[in-house]
Image 1: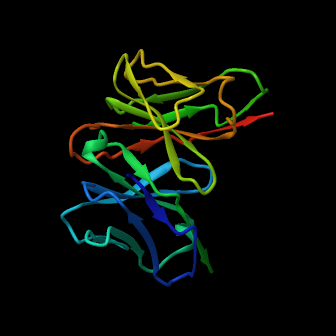
Image 2: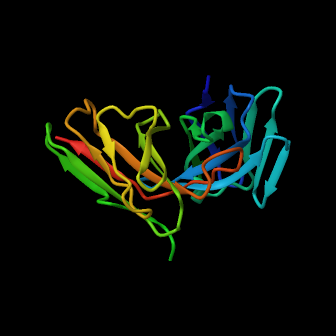
Image 3: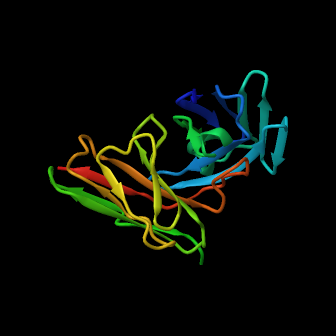
Length: 112
Length: 116
């Protein structure tokens, strides 16, 4: 079945690195995604990774994928107060109509 | 500017009334989606549409209805049959929806519905 899980909350100090973790259960996922949601707003796609890749880097963002353990992480380097938001991981599965299945979201709080 | 809009931003409804949430996109996307967001539960898919005049139920379609008469528009009606309608509703659109292609969805700003 489809299930994507994340921890609810993460607090870091400004300038530190943040690591947000996600686990999923369906090994047939083709793409895994990270979205950001600021208060009272819609979701914004930050990055995505194809399932045959181990890592993807984009400026301050690094995505790591461990397909064996079905574990996805998002590392934000030099975290800023503007990074405070809810972060959602999601997977798409061709056999499920390529729909996105979202995790419950991790609320990141950045303290000055 | 291309984008996806939702209106209104806040909506209040009396119990027993139907209400329609608007979603419009000018991105020329074929696929459109409605999600419901509750605290700590992530997003749950209500309905989706891959093409005009066609739509499919998602995971929590009961108490909701949609139409897709135009490519640009995908309104959602929350009916009185929906037992717990107070939530944040998000509309999204994407180019590709089928096969193994990346499904990059673009989201609107959301509508917060409160039932009084």
